[in-house]
Amino acid sequence: MRFCRFQRDGKTGFGIIDDADTVTVIKGSPFENYAVTGESHVLGELKLLAPIVPPTFYAAGVNYREHVTFAAQVRGEEPVFPAKPDVGYRAVNALAAHEDPIVIPHDASEKVQYEGELVAVIGRRCRNVPEDEALDYVFGYTIGNDVSERTWQKSDRTLWRAKNTDTFKPMGPWIVTDLDPDDLHVTITLNDRAVGEYDVSTAIFGVARYISAMSRYMTLVPGDVLWMGTDGATENMKDGDVVAVEISQIGTLRNPVVREQDPAGS
Image 1 (cartoon, one colour):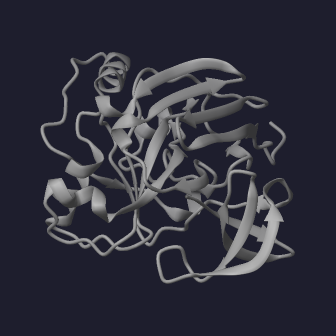
Image 2: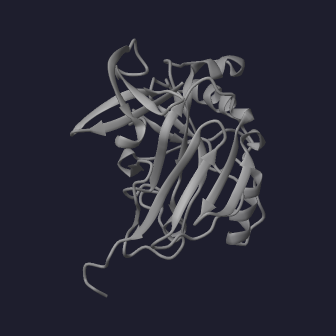
């Protein structure tokens, strides 16, 4: 099933999208005992929002070998691959929806880059879960673009603005249930030119391993999201570009890129 979150006439709601792209509005949250209503709309007539505003926003970070190697080469270092699943955090203020602009601050460098990722959405309260049961706690999957300002990422003590600037976390367009993450393939395009492609199954640590490791120390709750990292090299984005992340069996997350005007006019 495909679940979306949308805005219409100033109101926000959840809906189920059928194969004909008709959205049937539901009452309540997809993570609870929702009720299907008699109200429906054409998908193209709705403003899609980020499919969930998560209680906690987790990110796997470096989780693919080619991306680890690329990042190390940029720094002039030998690649060091993670020995265990380590998780970081992102800020919900950075979320943006499908087709929303990625706004680059006027004082950012030219090194603002995409990272197309699979996003796992937690559906059940989760604590001390064995790896072979971990995927049972996933509600579904969506797509994320972990936009990163590399100069800030290198110079700041934390990732507070390099990863968490407003609009730097497009997510969507919807959540798809009943998928096996190891069956999924990611393709990233910049202005319709393929710039990245990988199989989710090549991750250093998969979704189940991450959820099991995390749940040993923290309780995951419905609506939490876990971004699973990207693979390969990444390129700079500039004003006027359009970046798209496509994941098989889910869809395409597409966003234009806009550079903010310098208020000082310099």
